[in-house]
Amino acid sequence: MPDHDVAIVGAGPVGLLAACLLAQAEIDVAVYERRVDDDDRSKAIGIHPPGFAALDAVGVGDEVEDEALALDGGDVLWDGRVLASLSFSAQQRVLVLPQRRTHALLMQRLRQLPSARLLTGHEVRHVRNEEGMVHLELDTAGAPPRHATAFFVVAADGVRSGIRRRLGIGWRRRYGNGSYAMVDIAHERDDARVQLHCESAGLVESFPLPHGQRRWVAAETQGALGEADAFVDAIRERTGRQLELPAGLSPTVFRAQQHHAARLSAGRVVLLGDAAHEVSPIGGQGMNLGWAAALELAAALERSLTGARPEFREYERRVQHAVARAQRRSAFYMTVGHATKGPALAVRNGAIRLLGTAPLRRGTTNMITMQGGAAPFSVRRR
Image (cartoon, rainbow, N blue to C red; front, side, top):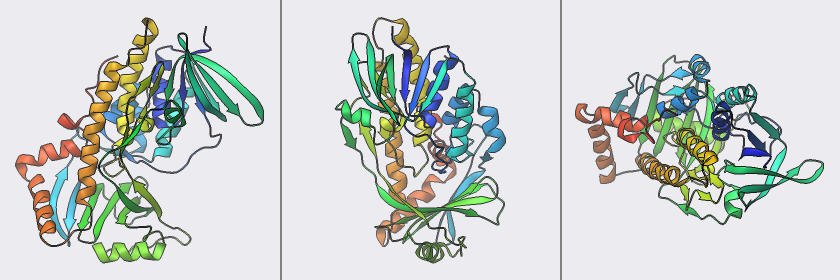
């Protein structure tokens, strides 16, 4: 018999949520994580309705609601003028909570479940399908390599997934990319609305955070806004706002790209989260998409454990369809935020105004909040 029913490679928010779902169903699950220290970077901040439904399904919904900031809506501006204004209903609610906190809450929940084990400092070097199970080759700090076995392995090891690469699964580029600089700083205004400045020189986003902070994101090129002074100057020139960055704080520069895996499973190994798809963080869909997919995968794994063979075809079909839609939305968001002038600027501003009109406003808000026809999956009862 294998050592575990399911082994999950990667203890990020998506891998942890999948482990909690399985352990709640009394499935023996081991989570292998290369890191031994906490990753306290903020990263993703937005929790959309499908993501919250998944968090609630593992019993951390109340804690997330207690700590998160609920957004009222958002305004799209150009040259100081409001092009479109949207408000979120209760069904469209978006919560803001830094990823380090959702990660901590999921870690806490996992440790409460007797069917789960978290093994940090364990790097999975290779996996091999063999006779109804998967063999894992493990490296642990200061110890000889060892092996483990599981009926199934979930690769939740991120965009640069070593398991995906070693299984020879292709990583295909999708349309949409851009470079951005970002800082989180204290903010004097006490509101819960997002501001998107779609300026001629490029996008500036301003997101409220819990505890009186805001995240500022600016489109940039070739690391031009990686220095504090350059970032502050760009925000002032594009929006008229004068930011004050604490001494020693430099913006984080990141590249937004989009990819998807050519297939999501190989035998008894299945990809999940960023290992399966890279979705631009502009629009805040990636982590929520991974959480919603974890609900689908947990149900597929339960069926596979009681059946004669893996049953991942429906999971793959639904996830690939949801990813394609999410990436189209993200590509649109990035295009809207590109530096623009002349006739193209007038066309873009006209399109934004149209999307904010009364007949289209509900659909636009659903798209932004991953609701209605924009929802990644219909949430199923398990």
